[in-house]
Amino acid sequence: ERAKMAQGAQRVIATLWPVDDRGSAAFMREFYQHLTATGNVANALQQAQTALRRSRHFRHPKFWAPYVLYSATQSPTIKFSSSRAGLSGR
Image (cartoon, rainbow, N blue to C red; front, side, top):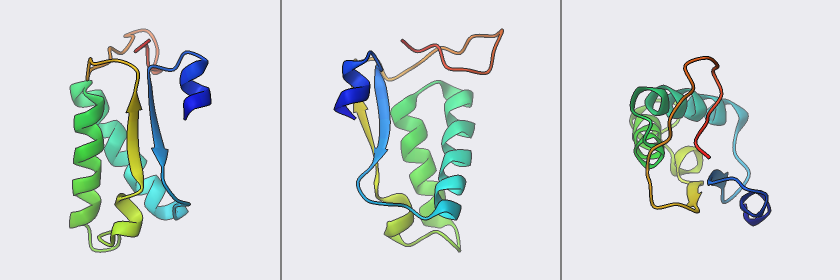
């Protein structure tokens, strides 16, 4: 995480322990759905964790608890470029 931020990343979502592939895919679907809807990284993280906690298959904390946000900025939001699907939150 520190290395990515040292290279210029403003925000990094990382895991505290190895995660299950299916759980990670479910988490990322939820995360990016909320992120693209609101642009708020912290809120998208929280909403994705809540969605997994409520799911039948991924409610155990091992699936949703390892995700953490490291941020080099106080701003919780990012802006998306309308011309591409990538993030332009730097």
